[in-house]
View 1 (cartoon, helix red, strand yellow):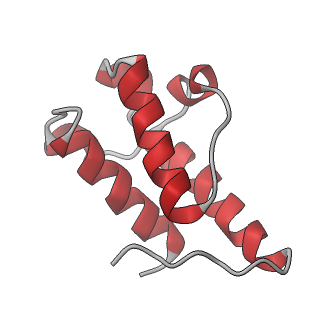
View 2 (view 1 turned 90 degrees about the horizontal axis):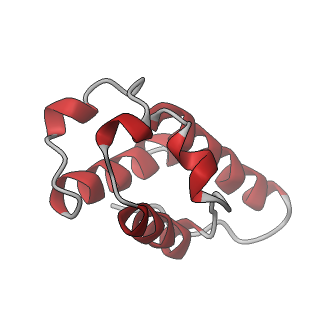
Length: 95
């Protein structure tokens, strides 16, 4: 699984299982995270989980709220790619 698919699966699983967002609301990656009515704590927990798994993060949750799900995943995947190109060992992908 490539980083985009892996990060997207991880974030969708979090949003469905922890933030209780119906999976069908996430089927369209163009949905803005602000439209999902996720509280700030849930956003921080989701980012922490992604950071733990991939070593990448979006620094401010305010920026995250203005992103679509696909935008957030693309940003995190790009950071993961750059991490690998910087000579750092890429972190393992979620299985």
